[in-house]
Length: 188
Image 1 (cartoon, rainbow, N blue to C red):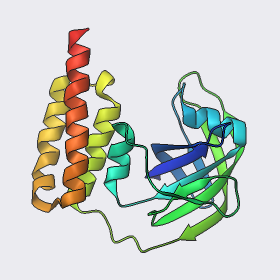
Image 2: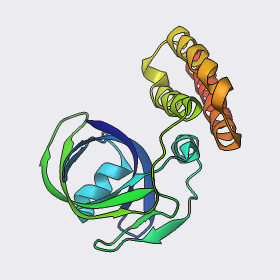
Image 3: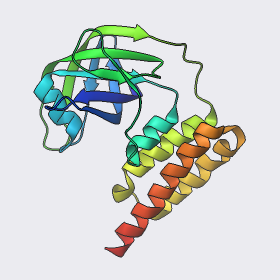
């Protein structure tokens, strides 16, 4: 099963890196698949640890993809690292082995600590729409503008029916970034 999460890792200077990432989960085993090159990949290979954060605040996903990384953090319990202060849950993991790949290596990890902070009440359609739009943003260079616009038009239907202030803020960040990146790519 793929879960949309926020992965936090530590760089060699102890600074926390925050990245949205779809991870594969099966019980206490996780596969994190960062693209090369990436800070997440470098940090996990260096420290052999990561924290998987579960949040329903889609601003974190949208924010990380649009240059907003200043999210409140708390110290982890079992590993050297930090999790999102507003996470519904987090899972501290250690790296067990790597299946290297030229584009996207598989980092196999095992849970060493799971903590539930608050109940997950499900995503509304606006939250889902923001998550999907954020994924589109991460793939702007690989998808046609027509495909992106068609997807955004469809996502906007459910978004308009259920969005609150957080979702509207996140949607605005993502759609403006998509427009900007699309313009930049067309100018090349």
